[in-house]
Length: 358
Image 1 (cartoon, rainbow, N blue to C red):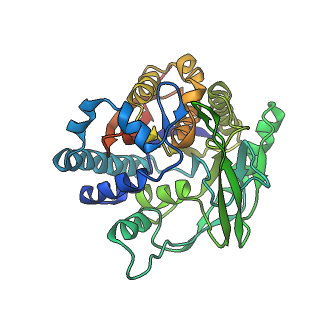
Image 2 (image 1 turned 45 degrees about the horizontal axis):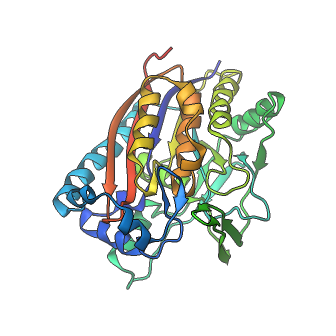
């Protein structure tokens, strides 16, 4: 039978492709961000309101020398993930990530979607010659070479059929439209009710979403083995999967792989997260501790109200933990990067599941 031999979890922030000297640019953008969901209540506040509520101890983290240390630790961990992936010699790599105004919009937003075309186009991010350095670095991190990334369509179809037979009514996709665009509303709790910030994306040829292209670029060095992209609607209410459903989904992915009648070596990778655009160290550390302790109960009961906005990508890790529960997790890096005094930034991390778990 086929077997998942390795699990990996990685953040995919644009900051991971940028020198720490450019991290402050994101802090400037945070002042205009309308998706700042703050712990522990999980409510949206303005940047100005967040400054008033912030812990003054955050100031010691907003420092270029501290950023340099964090950048070095995270870069080393990404390199270690890439080496582990190469050493595993996989026949297929399942990537569990999400879509953010890229190819899925509110005309059709599935909770779980499995791609099983023969290839998925990766369109290189090519910034203008006069683009700011931060934009150029970010583009590099999400793919600088256009290619048709090979997909293990046989495994993709097998996962789809297995999931449906086991009461997970997944969506499927066999190709990407040449032009994708539409609207998505961010519906998050506020102190006064609910926000509904609607973003409009004009149709354009986008290709592979960034959560998947990050893996191809940073962990595969533009030399991909066949992948199976699985997209979770982590971000957009009202049909985000619960943590419990997400963990069970990952468990069922593993069972699908093990029921595939081949001797294939399979790797599963979570791409995205952890907490951001606001750092939630408490949530991040609780999730990481549960992964290391193989504590599916805690992962299944992470507080939903703290898994909104970009922190919602933690669901990708929860699913991967479910798929990798037969393996043992170790944390290669975790850096809570506070890029402003308001507490905005991200909890960037890398985890590896290998060896024997249960």
